[in-house]
Image (tube, rainbow, N blue to C red):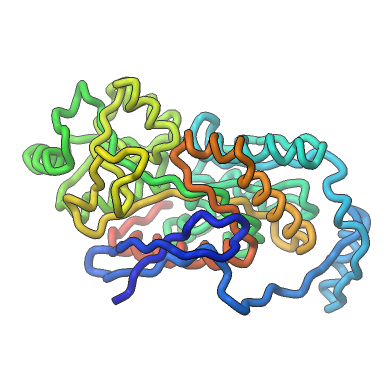
Length: 373
C-alpha cells in the first residue's frame, strides 16, 4: 500500500523521522508525497563556487564550454540588496512567510532584503520576472505551489519553465482549512455543508486565491469526493478572497490557516474542519475533513527558488541561511502564529519534494478535468 509522506520539521533537510498521512485522488489511488530529508548517501551535484558579479558572466560562458569555474569569494555574498519576488498580493501567507524570513536574513547578511509583490495570472507574472532575472543571487522567488508545480499542468503555454528554477529551500507548510461566512451558511459541520450543497446544487460560491491555487484545487477535490458542486469565484490572492468572503460576496473558502485563523478567533468566519490527516494539536476540538471524507488531505507550502543557472555556491549559502533563520526562536514563534510547520530543507531535498508535488497536483488536475487558457 502506497502512502503519501509528509516531513517532520527538520532544519535544512537534516535527519529524522517522517510522519505519514494517507492521501488519495478519486479513481487515481494513493500517491507519494516525499520526505523533505535527503536520502542516505545521496550526492549533490558539482559545486561551482563563483567569485563575484563580474566573474559570474564569464563563468556562465565558461560553463557553456564545459568549464567549471574555480572557487573565489562566494562567501562574500551578498554585497548589496537582495530582492525576493512574491507572485501574490500582500497580506496572505504567501507574502507574510517570506517577509518573516527576509527580515532575519537582512540582519544576518547586514544587507537589505526586500519583498516585491508581483501578483497576477496565478503567480505566473511574478514567476516569469524572477525566471528572467540575472542569475547572480540578487533576485529570488518565494512562492506557494502554483507557479512552481501546478501551472504547467493547467496552462497550455507559460513564459517560463518551472522545472528550470534552482530549488533553494522549502520554508514551511501550512494546512488548508474549510471556512464559511456564518451569516450566509447555516452549516456547522462538514456533513451539514455537504447536505446543504446537495440540496442547493451550484448555489454555494467558493472563494479561492485564484485559478490553479491550492485553494482552488482543494475546492475541486472536495467537490469530487463529496459529490457536490460549487460556483468558483477566483480572486488574486488569499487576502482579497478573504475580504470577499467577509463581505458576503462568497459563501465558503478553502484557505490556509495562516491568515484565516485570526478571523475565525474573532468570530468573523466559522471554521468547519482542517485539511490535515489528524486533528491539529493547536486546535484539538476542530475536526478534520477526512473524518467525513476519508483520505482527504490538503496543505500549502512556501518555497524559495532562484533563476536558472544561479551559482551553486550562492544557492547553498542562501539555503543554509534560510534554515538558520527558521531555527531561530523568533521565526519559530511567528511561524506558529501562521499555523506553519517550519521546514528549512536543503536544495536537493527541496527539488525532490517539488518534483513529487508536481506529479501529485498534476494527477488531481487531470482527474478534475481542469484547464486554463
